[in-house]
Length: 151
Image (cartoon, rainbow, N blue to C red):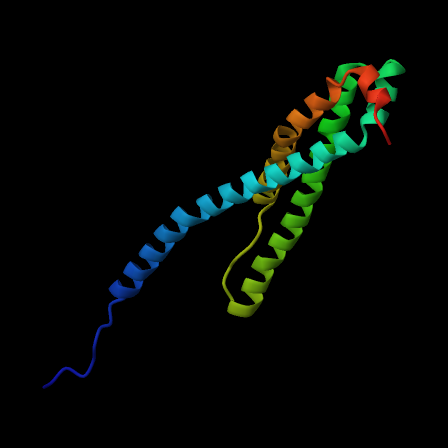
């Protein structure tokens, strides 16, 4: 009697899945790295503009007795706050994506607290690194030149 059944193997599907995931694991870190560098450059430029626009304020603070580290700390905290706010927004938007994927495709995607904290930490670290040079420039402004600055 003839066989009336077949066995389908998922070898082709498994091979496709492996090639797709290996490609994604190669491309996604590069895209994330580029995004981090671009975000750091944007934060640095924002902070440099802030230093230039607030030269007189920095001069007044230095003339009234603020130490260089106080000025540096102020600008570093501003950069960290700016990047942390962006990190919170990114985690909130990124947290919606797994919800949509789970709802639309019934795929078990989720944002874990560890990944969210890693994203927030990375955003804050990028802000601190990118804000160091503008903070250093602000704290090294000569008091007389800063006070003489035109408004």
